[in-house]
Each structure stands twice: as structure tokens, then as C-alpha cells.
Image (cartoon, rainbow, N blue to C red):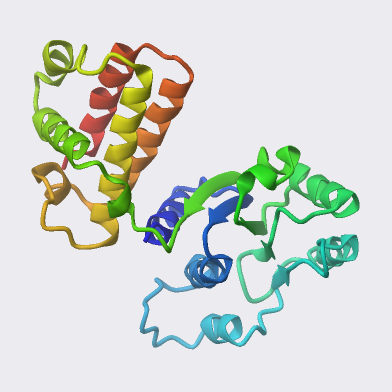
Length: 277
């Protein structure tokens, strides 16, 4: 399940003081994604160090579970569209500082169903974000979300009904494992790139599949117990594996931006050195 990675990454950014003010979550199950966001909200707003079996009396978890948290607003389409009145009401309620939580939080289910008026109201809200406001927009197709809204959110893909394992090509996965184990704590990792990987694939699309397979494999290792975990995975903390996922996604962006492949590989191994314990 990809959601564990999504929550881990958002929590990591929160602890680093780099939390975005709005997230766009593309998912194949909006109800499950909504439940995952509620769980994340508990962790982000806990005045203590959050535990699943919490014995503190802060009451935030109870307020979230019973839909009674004043600083949490859920918005859904009313009929065919999300109505402008719902966005305006949210903006009015969030003009005050939250009492029970660190953030005023809104969750919009069906973020691809804005009309012109409601989209414009939300866009103004996103363009001038307050420090104490946090938003989650859920959609089943991010391409149907208005581009001006999409561009102001950090985007995550959250899948439930198709396992990452189903997407992995076994032959390419073997190549990925060999590569990762070969560069792991190897002082000659740049030389390995030059002698073994420089002409490994001829087409840029093949490199994209290679790094996508790497992304799926590391995500799956984080989310469940696999019996084929390589040394690199076994010897890296979950926190550093999450950082590795962010790095792989950056490499994929470089590939799509036509950056030189040799430069991408060298950048990858140099930045990977930071995550070895």
C-alpha cells in the first residue's frame, strides 16, 4: 500500500519544518485515502509523541474519530459540483486561530469537481496561505483538477487496489537490485556508473522504466515484508529509504527533462552516499 509512504513523507517534511500548505492526493479509493488523512491529522496535531495506543488525555484523536474537531472541515461535491458557498464558509471559519490543534485543516473529496466560482475562491485561498492552515485535496484523476490549483499543491499518488508488486518486471528488477547493491557503500560507485551503467540502456524510456521499477521496489519494501530485500534495503533506516524515494522521483523528473543520463546516474550515487548509515 502506497499510503504508508505518503504519510511517512509528509510527517518527515513536518519534522523538518518543510510542510507544504496543501497536498493533492490522486488515489484509486477516495474513502480509504480520507481515512488515511484522518490518521495523519492525529499525528501532525498530537501535543505529545504520537502512539497508536495513546494513553494521553489530549482528546484530539477522539474529536477526529467522532467528527467533532472544530478546526477540521470536510468538503464534498453538493450534487455535480463543489459549491462556492462551501469554500467561502471554510475561509470564514479559518479566519480565527485553531484552539485544539496546531492547524486549521480542510479536506476536499472530489477535488476534480470544482465549478468556476468555487475554483476561483479556493485558488485565492491557496495563493495567500496562512501558516496555520493545512489542506488535503483528494481526487481520482489529478489531470482533471484545474491546473492553477494543481500547481499550488504537493502531489502524491496513493494506490490501494493494485499492489506495487504487480507493476514490477522481474528482469528489470534484477537489474535494479544488482545496481543498488553494487553502488551501496562502494567508494568506486562513480567508476561503476561509467564502466557498467553508461550504456546499459540505449533509450531514455528504458531508463525511466528502470528508475520506476526501483521506486516501486523500495516502496514495496517499506510497506510490507518482502523475502527479497537486498543489503542496501536491510541496512538503511526507514527514514533514509523515504529520502531515497524522494531522490528517485527527482531522477525521474531529470529523465523526463532530457538531462544527460550519465549525469543523472552520477548525481544519484553521490546523493545516495548521504543515506548510508
